[in-house]
Amino acid sequence: MDTPYGSAPLPVWERPEPQPRAAPVPLSRAKIAATAIRLADAHGLDGLSVRKIAKELGVGPMRLYDYVINRSELLDLMVDAVYAQIAEAGQHAEWRATVLAIVHRTRDAALDHEWFADLLGARPHLGPHALAVGESTAAALSQAPGVRGIDDLQRALGALNAFIVGALRREITERRAARSTGTDVSAWQAALGPYLTRMLDTGRYPTVARLVIDGAHLNAEETFHHNLSTILDGITSRPRT
Image (cartoon, rainbow, N blue to C red; front, side, top):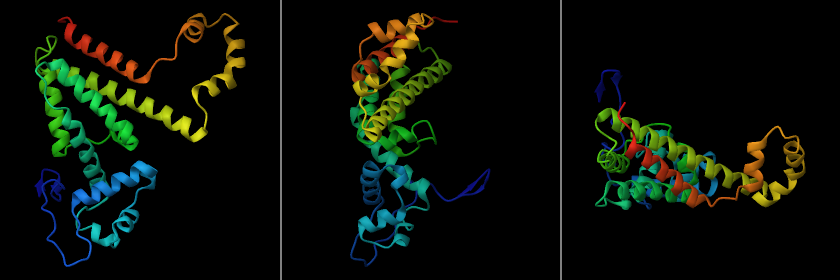
């Protein structure tokens, strides 16, 4: 394919599947992506390689390159397979219900496939299912009362996506830290409690002291929903400038 930047291969989405071969193991891009997802779920992206995928499928590594040119294309297929799950949120009669359903479905997918959060906000996700989710989200937000034109829509999408990426990465990072250290929140508080008490007793951090002493340990799902609702409230009521 010729582009303004030179010749480039067709994107994986537009290349036809290779012709079936006389081999004991039939392959497809969907089958390769599903196997890669299982390995990434178990071992993370660092534990993912073409050799391991090929071994899991019972084929030689070079055979996979008939289907994907490189690791980036493999990740694209994996990501779009997850977006297929998110797309099941579907459309609702009211714009806010659609956005809530999509974003909560995105959180569920990221918790099921933690590596997915590592790829959010990085390379553009342009697979057919990712584009379908993007279309549903943008179309819903365009109906929000505070969105009056394309500039408003771009800003609304930017704010929403920034929240999704930040919230999911933080939640999953905390899960990973607890898992890798074997330390839950209570154990962490017990270990650092004496130090923190001494620091707060100095009186130099009164607001932090209120948060530590009076603040409850918030439920992650409830907090996610509350903060998401706050973002949507802001989009709805944003005054004209």
